[in-house]
Structure formats: structure tokens, C-alpha cells
Length: 119
Image 1: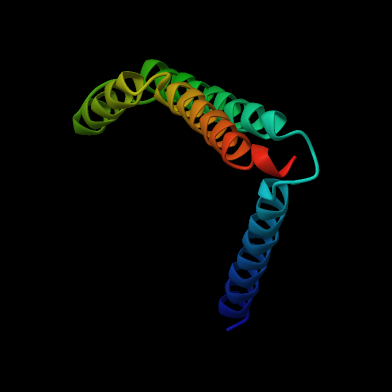
Image 2 (image 1 turned 135 degrees about the vertical axis):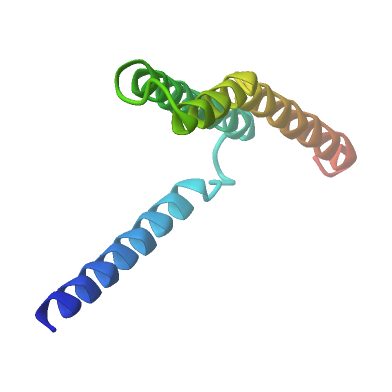
């Protein structure tokens, strides 16, 4: 029974850590409307670039596994297919980040134009 209880506590601790991490990420994502609106659009593009960097590191790790650990068999073939799939998506996150940035800037421009009579 102590093993089961230990596993339960470990699972609860991981859930708490996950919730804490999620809250931190949500806090980071809150947009400060008093700041420069253009900088928020730039921040979106930066987040996408950072995410792409993580994906690139992940791809490198998978390639290392293929080269050094799992070199043949069904698992290697499945992993190779997965690596090919991930590599085909290369830079899509950057492209989406730039597109989101452009959409934010266009929206800000439309809002500025629509409410220009107020200022």
C-alpha cells in the first residue's frame, strides 16, 4: 500500500505543478493594454519564433535517437515517419506567428481609423 500512496502523491504533485505552470503561462499571455499595441504584435511573433526553436530542438533529439538508439525495426520506421512529418511542418509556426502579427497590426489600424474622430 505505501507504494500506491506514494504514486498517488506523486501524481497529485505533478497535477499541481501542471496547474501552476498553466497559471504562469496564462499570466504571461495577459496583454497589457496600456503598453504599445505594436509591441504586442511583435510579442506574438517572438512567441512563435521561440516555439519553432523548441520544435527544432525536438526534431534534433528525434534524429539523434534514430541515429544512435533505435536504428532498425518497426519502431525505427515509425519514428522515421514521424520525424519526416515534423520536418515537413518546419517553419510553419514562424509563418503563423508572422501572419498573426500582421492580422493584429491590421486590426489595430482598423480600430485607429474607426475611432480617429474621437481624438
